[in-house]
Amino acid sequence: MQERLQKILAGAGIASRRAAETLILQGRVSVNGAVVTELGTKADAGSDDIRVDGKLISTDVSKVYLMLNKPRGYVTTLKDPEGRSIVTELLHGIEERVFPVGRLDYDSEGLLLMTNDGDFAQKMQHPRYRIPRTYCVKVRGILTRRELKEIEDGIKLEDGLFKPVAMHMERMNPKSSWVVMTIQEGRNRVIRRLFDAIEHPVARLIRISLGELHLGKLKEGEFRALKKREIEQLLSSSGKRE
Image 1 (cartoon, rainbow, N blue to C red):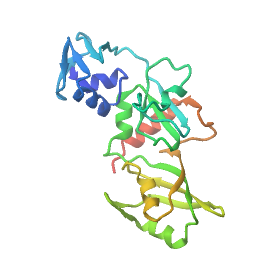
Image 2: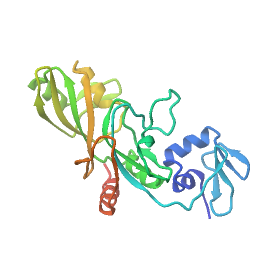
Image 3: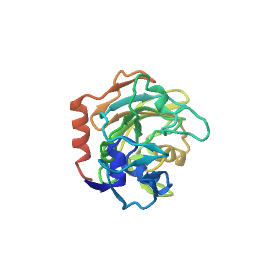
Image 4: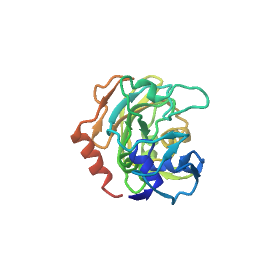
């Protein structure tokens, strides 16, 4: 059956559909020996020879869904030109090729989904759906009530107004403040840029939940398989439009 090439790559666990599109545009995908760079190209996974970087793909793969407690100092990519550690190095004992769903910055920590199901990854990241993500954030300095109110009302950034879904003060130390913040958008480094804008730079940023999925007692650097119920809840959340 003929399907779009990026859908086939996602179904084979190579990458999310969006990332698969990038592979195609980069000329890293071939069909029956011919390099493909057109995003609308279709192929038959059952009869065509489809390769990524010269390696034949297989569509007969078991689906894997993992939750990782990402430590600082790891990048959420499969390769890093700077030679930094990548998150897949933490997945000891996982034979399937999996990739991160979305991103956490090199210096950020916490809940990160890993999978080889490109359709699942696409639904988790699609901009039409706004799955809430909650972070525990440590910032330098003491946040005042006025500053908290400013954040709740929305802070204007260079790419538009940013307003969290919810936020509350967790605790204050002599030189820092901890807040818990829930957001529903995926602008790059938006929480860090928010606190930079009010001169309280982020010292730590930990994602503690995604939808109804919580990090819980999972230790830093550890991972576990998602339960069927958790996968269904995430997919249900992704089906709720903005």
